[in-house]
Structures are given as structure tokens and as C-alpha cells.
Length: 180
Image (cartoon, rainbow, N blue to C red; front, side, top):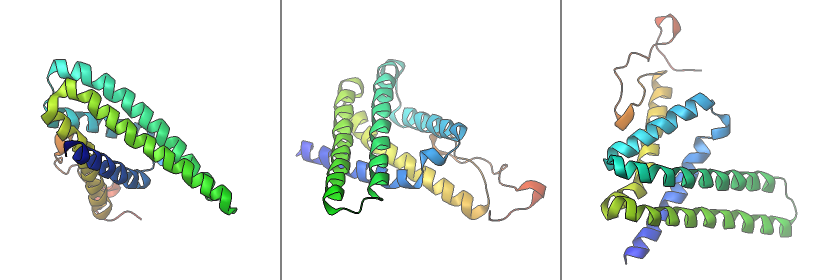
């Protein structure tokens, strides 16, 4: 039963992650902005898991390797999806769909292996929590981006998901409003 639940969580995380990654296209983002988001995510994970120094020393290298491999898979999957947009032959498209599906399976398998590698480092409770933290962070990030679009800027998300004091929400010239 626990294996089924873990597998279901992994699949849900993968699907949700793919949807959000489609909305946050890393290639279209400023590298400094991506660094800031990555730092916020790492801070969020550390705070939410309440990592000890010993846990952090073991966890972050495992996470970094996982994250690099996941980025490579997603990049190749994105390229396959982009290439499939120009295919007009049914048989070639079917092959392309199989390749994309295989990449998605690789990502799910990678997520599963990552969580299993985290078990001896973090223990059951923190690993279970970790499986959901990236989703939670992305939800908070998407909500923050939505709020900024609606309010024409605004306070940034701070480590731990806390909002700022609102000092950065004014547009040049002191005007507030929605961006065009």
C-alpha cells in the first residue's frame, strides 16, 4: 500500500511539475531571476524540512545530482515535443510520442530513485514531506507571479514563503497599476 501511495505521489508530482514548467519556461527567463528562484526554493525546502547541518551536508549533493538529471530529461523531452510539432507522418509521430512517453517515465523513475536515496538521509517523515515540497513551492511561486501581474508588481516572495512589506510594488514615477 505504501509503495502504491508513493508511486501515485510521484506521478502526481511529475504531472503537476510538467504543467507548471510549461508555464515557467526556463529558457525565456533571465538567468539571475532563475538563480533567485532556485535560492528561494532551496531556502524553502531547508526551512520546511528543518534540516540539521548533518542532513543538509548529505541531502544537497543528492538533490543537486537529481535536479541536474531532471533538467536534462526535461530539456530533451521539450526538444522532442518541439520536434513533434513539425511531423506530419502518422508513423513518425507515433514514434515521437513513444520517445516523449519514455522520457516522462525516465523522469518518474528518477524521482522515485531520488526519494528512495533520501530515505536514509532524511528519514520517513521528512522524505514524505519532501515529495510534496516542490509542488507547494511552485504553487506559492505561481500565486506570487499571479499577484504581481494583477497588482503591477508588489512584494516579493521571501524565504519560507513569506511576503515582503510591499515596498517594491510601485511603478516608476510612483504610479501603481497593471503592466501592459
